[in-house]
Length: 107
Image (cartoon, rainbow, N blue to C red; front, side, top):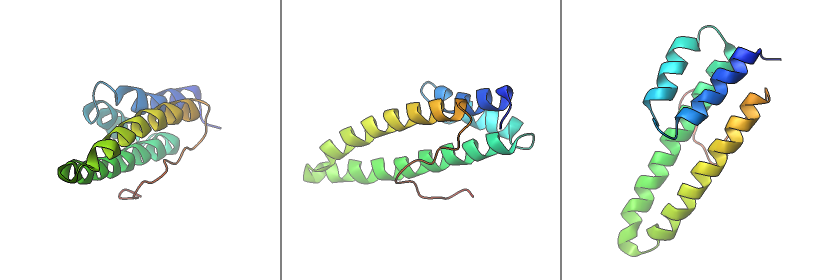
């Protein structure tokens, strides 16, 4: 079972992603990844999520020219917020959350 500090730092990845999508989670991950396997797992999971959804958003942005990208961008935005909140809650509960539809770039 992860300690309270590990759960707090892993939750902060997701909460800090709203105002600072890259900088906040990156600083926490670089400082704490060697100290905790649980924090390292959530850091990798967050960055896999971020890169994957960035790729999906770029593709949807291109598809706006065909008019099917607009609903795709809306759905991706909603999914990003909902999955981030779920991940924050699960990580604070001490669980390992895996985002759906994520390409595993960082293992």
